[in-house]
Image (cartoon, rainbow, N blue to C red):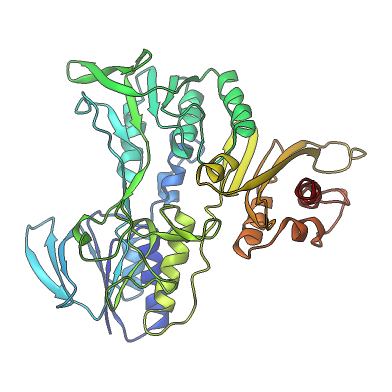
Length: 447
């Protein structure tokens, strides 16, 4: 069996390693246009901020490790086209310029994603940077060495993590976003208000509800960012407004979402026979809405890549879907969420209710304790849980992993209220925080 894998970050690495383990006789070839694999882009802010000293630690595999597994690893090779009927791909060696054709029995598409680049006047100026891969990380580090003013555009996870890292380096930092809140896809307002206060206390300028109109520069380098409401000095600008799937060559050939994310079934199969897809290039089944969505997360990618290998020859293990579970640390605040926030759910026309509680995570007779804010969002008619959020100075983010399981299995607020959780004063109260929010939700639902 001849297996070709297109692209090798998280999903591609997982697919390659697991395919080599499961099918000893398989001839596996990886084509990757970069010279690195498996870079954890979620660690860029930690690298920028100096928490991670050696950037090599953000790689969990390498071309050499794949070759040791017997995988034919072709770095600096770009796939130009795919003929699904002939089961052929056209490839260019970026080092020699040579073009050639290869064929496959099974094709795994893990081409990933790329940052969305907004069409803004002046974008061609120097020191306007992206934050996605190893090269971007090094470029950011180098660019901020001898400058003072940094502007970050986009207040999602990457943008928020970066502004904290830049501020820790002593920079004057401005965060711009068109939305009126940071992290508006992941947290409701009662949580983002607390997070924004934390950023402001540290001297970070939040320029929200603003749209960037143009970049202005001097001597070819960016000097300021002009929005519809003001202007901000900028020696370096980092643009992180979102990602899009890298699937241009497959448009019109495979079933996709409107944004180009490849639709796969529960076994990771695309609309073409013997062609699979996984990771940021693919759509995922989103359990809260029971629909296909685009949620580019490393966690989704490694699971999908692993499942491709398991299902390559025969249907073996089904994809369980995703809840988009994620977390972030903003200075002393530990924050996580899973599923839909209330604002987004209502925007989608879902009839939801919610309950938010604040309580100390363990008994007050203990030497120390911290308050936690916990919210659950659920369908009004059925009580089915579709989202949850938590914030505390004590790290309680793993509770959102528990809530992810509840959402994945269509469990209700009644299930949450009376699920058996242990009690030990070092860790929690006789009524666990999840029990408490579940009990509160059952009362709201019955009103």
